[in-house]
Length: 171
Image (tube, rainbow, N blue to C red; front, side):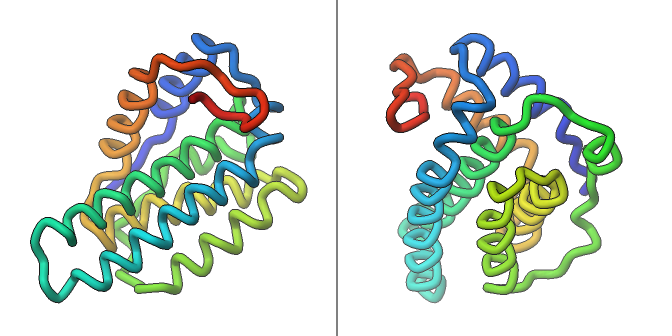
């Protein structure tokens, strides 16, 4: 499936503009926020594997939590970059049809890219993270990345709290 990130960028830009959130504030809170999402992802993956043989509501709940965590990570990644530079334009869409399910190899690669990204804020890691998350969602769990992100953006747009400068996120 071809994935186009431009609409996701536009929707998140509107969300940030509405709330006065800056790229710098998102970069400042990147490690803490993404680590929180990675903790949720680890718990969800463990539960998913635990309940995979049984199926049912618990497996579905774990799968839903995996999707939420991956989309949360994607939101934090996109919110660190407000402009699409020439290095990103060639990667503003990608195709997940070329991938095969991989079990934990993709999660390992995802951890690597997430840890490398804040060192220099390089677009290649930005691209790799989003592409890998899309692949995991679509190939490993059968979910459409764009639809999942659109639902996540709708969800965060409905929050009525305030931006917490200490935690660098909307609460």
